[in-house]
Length: 125
Image (tube, rainbow, N blue to C red; front, side):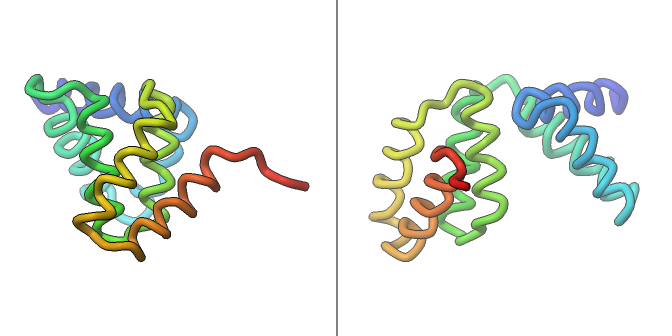
């Protein structure tokens, strides 16, 4: 069972962030604490993201909503990139920001817009 969760966790992370980033992210967390890295991969990504009740795309939108509402900009950017990788459209992310702004407030929306622009607009210079 644990091996199944580990495999599923890596599959979900690879779909979201790409193989190189999924492996690098896991190694980064292992350097901090191997048990914590294993827990996040197996339980969060394998166990929670891998559950059959919701499509990954919906889980991604829910995750971005929570991160926006909590004002977690760096993680929001990471999950916006992941969302785009699995087929969430720019328009869907925009609508999520507009919708959640009415529940989490204008400052969280402005930060989410900033994150969205950084993730979706070409880098200058």
